[in-house]
Image (tube, rainbow, N blue to C red; front, top):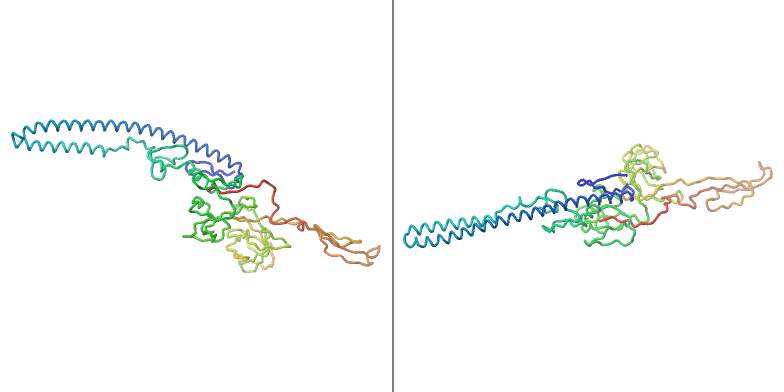
Length: 422
């Protein structure tokens, strides 16, 4: 079982190569770990709010001190006004002094009221409660879970957003044809039916887009317009979903070299171009050839008579395939092996049909059916047969006449509705 982890909180993530039962347990572990992180954040925020309340109390005390100073200043102004009024009547010098003192008092009053607006309250507010624009704590990780802080609710991610951020792009077996719509107005996921999805509505699906270099040939997950036409840039803001209807998922080979497909191709000595004659892994049989290109994708390894070791496919155009190395022999129908698959490819495994022949000497009727068919029957007179003339016949046994040979005989199992979470 693979054990991928998130980069920040080291949470277990699902992986397409794991069993679903294992990933369910891993997802449960991830939720428990998230719950623990959220509980810790909640405690930190509550402690921060308590400290903030204490800080606000200190601010109130400082404001009360400023008010007291303003009251004292007003009283001094009143006293000075009475004294200076008397002095003004008796002396111009007293009037000048009064004016100077009033100016000084006004300046002190201005400084006192200005201090209220210039107070730096940040030392009194714990760092854990200061929220910046992207919804993260200034001193820590993302604020998720059940924590509710009203300092700036618009900047705090809701739990649903956090869940979508973690699980969007994962594929799940859903036990119903009905996909629920969640509180944000979007469905839980989309059916894997080969449709196109708007990335402006489901932006998190962009994380499963195929590499830009593969967009021209990838069987699924490529960028396209609303009609499914491949392309890049403006106007191409959709993604082609994979189509899992009627199939069953298969783990990618990823270089292991055991996932192989079989086809018959035409080769030409000295040329890197080959032609698909019968793609046995795409439903072809010896009786009914198929020229489908399933399995033939750039980067896939290819081997067979007349094809040098290490050759890979570089381009596919209809039934024409270009290899990385020129062929060393000419053949009208050579069996080749393709090793590996790509995401979204759809092909089966070729099985060898059980075949054989039997010759019958005697009174042969010349008819056969089912898994048997008659090659020939002929009348033989005398010769080596001691009892005189007889009919000689030959029947061929071929199981492919009644049982499918390709793409594969699928194992029985419960049907499921596969969706990709958005």
